[in-house]
Image (cartoon, rainbow, N blue to C red; front, side):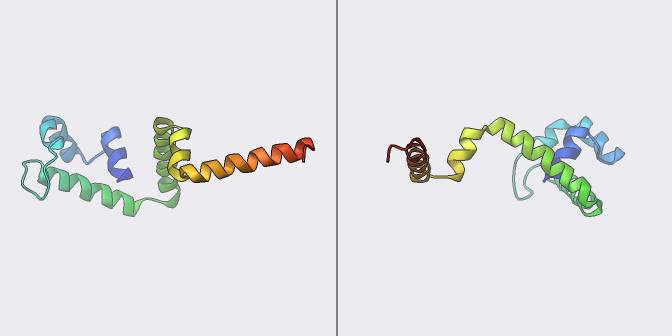
Length: 110
């Protein structure tokens, strides 16, 4: 999927496919499933070309794409949402209790 996103953003499909995409943007935005919509064949060509590019790419290229899109995802999502998605409410309460206890022990009040 990352290669499909990258090729769509950079407009780097094959020349004939890119010309079709530019000429008929309504087919690209067609979101029907199971081949019932008019954009199904175009979408299949786009996916096939992205899969071929992914298979032919090097490890460094894949790593660059993952880091680029992961960083963009984190920028949109934010750290707080990621923290809450990773840990549940009780986990965060236990972490807070542990930090509070460590702080109290560090001050020598116990």
